[in-house]
Image 1 (tube, helix red, strand yellow):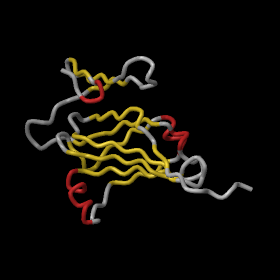
Image 2 (cartoon, one colour):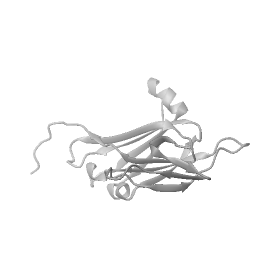
Image 3 (cartoon, helix red, strand yellow):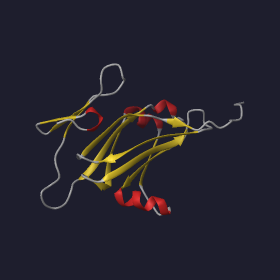
Length: 153
């Protein structure tokens, strides 16, 4: 069975990867389906991105929105789960257990902070439906603002 992001589920294992030459990472993780009783299990996000796009001097915010928070976002009432990390942690890849997103639920993950030029803002985002307890978000695309920054002295 083929899943999102080129994933293949085989006998309870979820293998994710991309074709050679893309720089994408290959991840293998034990995956399980929602429990028959007691509700859906919580989700853990495993994310990688180009950490060099972010400042090594400032904290970076990782916000995780569940389905309810996505609905509230239009009114400005959304309060996502937030984790604060430094660039070194992003370079190693992040594994973030969610307190609110469960299997089968819509989510959005947003990574944002000061760009590597210490002037602009950099961010990356992904959204989808959590089909497994482990959601692997590989090589998220980072975008940056393009403000006119004062010259460094």
